[in-house]
Image (tube, rainbow, N blue to C red):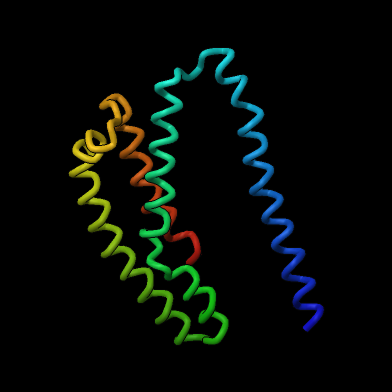
Length: 140
């Protein structure tokens, strides 16, 4: 039991450090972006708003199935694993496909509701597509 806990702690530390490192690098690159005027203040606001929508969408597009998949995949073997994985994938294809279609169709209205300028609409749509595709990463 102690070895398992030690292994888990090591894994969490490694992945957590990697995630934290990305955030630290992004933080230190912020002055570079501002100084060389790559992004305007409006751009930063749009990025923050799209990022907030992304964080919310990530939770919805996984339907809690990522945790369930991780929990039950190891308990199954052979054909049972295939059935479970394919059921989850096909449900997500149908549900996320419908959500993607609805959000892409209504993305202009969503942008107006969030006071997002229409010049950032392609970025919003790209994020919606990306979130839909990234929801399947836990199955691979």
